Length: 256
Image (cartoon, rainbow, N blue to C red):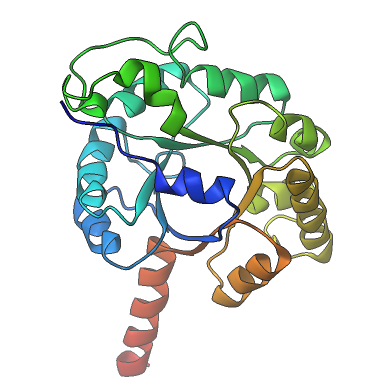
């Protein structure tokens, strides 16, 4: 029988070791394969703001899983137990749940990742997550290495952030600063001083509960600022932004 491996990303969050990530929106296994060798601690595979579906996540997981250093984190399109079930069954072990605004929504997300009696995850035998039945005791041990990250990005979520972070089974709270900026009335200026100060205060609240805090930025200098501020897991780039910026610059150099 095969033993279930440890979720290195989840372990790092518990130990408060900074984790540097990268955001992938292309839905391509080739891009995932390329990114797996870059040296990032985690790679976010996005299903919320991309056309990627569950079937397209599978080859991306397979591409990244061959690299034991990098952890794939999947963002489902919504806090939906049916989608979670499919993602977990194909081998996703770290999920970033968007638009969590209440402790009840956070608790529901955790429950969807646990088998009864600790949760409501549907049981299946020969799935990729347990290597098609080869991992001994998978169904009793799976929750130990499933990482649940919840994304706070509304005024309501801000007001509940400590209660959300305190939910048992929530491993980290991610600040969605673009939607948060919009909620605060600063769309599309996510870098408005009020947004920045609100994020700093939210991070302190998350850390006061003892949970890891996370954020995304496509600006390398800002990524360093958030790390210096104390964020635990920080995504420092987005594949679509990087390609657009570099290809635009190259075209401008030769075409003017």
